[in-house]
Image 1 (tube, rainbow, N blue to C red):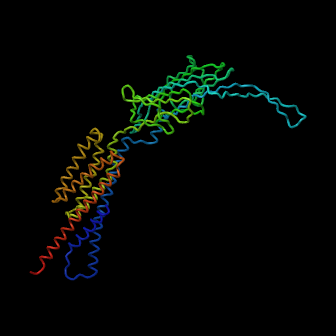
Image 2 (cartoon, rainbow, N blue to C red; image 1 turned 180 degrees about the vertical axis):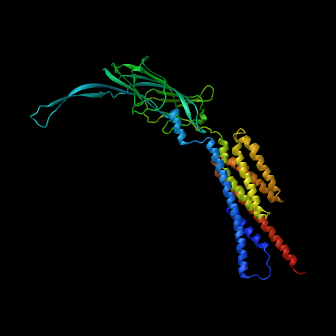
Image 3 (cartoon, helix red, strand yellow; image 1 turned 60 degrees about the horizontal axis):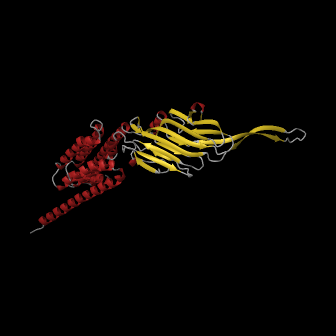
Length: 468
């Protein structure tokens, strides 16, 4: 773009200078005044071009900004609102089992003054059972994606049906007291159809809810076996995570995570999560079933799934609009440089007109994207026909192969580049560099052709001026 502005300035300065015919013998002051006038006129022309570029760039940026504001604008504020309305990320901890006996002991405290009697104080001493009470674990989780919309964007929400089951055994041969502590996966969430059974009996009314945990206290007989189950429905966003937080041996553990509408190709896992032992497709092949199996294991890694980002409204259009500013700058620079080198009349005015028309075509792409069923239809009915008309008009500016090649470059940079770079984000710089190199090569070819023609004209003029 800088080279194009320099070419416009140089051409305008020489053009204004050539129009001034010397009348007789001019003074030095008059000559300096004439050169200064030519310089000011050329600078004003360049400033007009720069002002036009600035205004049209602002227009393009506002087009992208307006489209982004009304289509798939993901913000942290809206995400936090979804978390409070629908449910937060769920991090499910494993059941904690506390087995202990409380013993009352008498403590004798001797005073410093030996003349005073000793103080006897009773206190409760807890004697925990450190052996592992877990015999087997079976967890079954069904997680179904349920996208939530807030503002103009969709956020990854889900609904869960959770069923947890444990077989426990009192490892002590004496009566004990037992606390079954089940942590809920989120402090601020909704839990529906909540149930808790112990050996087939409903124990939910006996459980205490405190600090986002459900706790059941009961007495244990020697070597007693417990079959404890908890089930509920809930919902959350972004990811679901399960972890055995206690440092203990994990025995006969099986967690089945069913994802009915999440295909295997889109699976992802939260940080610190182990990969599943087995992955199977659902019966309709629309989802998958993850199986985590452990036995005689010690692990601090979790298990779960992270939901993929959702396609947003106008995602393709937004991706292409994100590349139009660079495409437009390349087009404007190419037009200004090439038309100036080809010495086309009113090269600056033509560059401004074609540049403005191209910018408005990009603006219409964003405006009509919703009205014409998305990017593909809008591009086929609005953007491509408009740029084809502009390319056809460009070939009418002057004759020759160079102007036709310029029209082809105009179409490549105006249509193919933003589409390719926007829809293939991993190779954006590759497409930009290819277009830039192609533009430089084309400009160099036009310049070389112009210099060769001038050299041939000068040679023929010198040959005609020599006496026979």
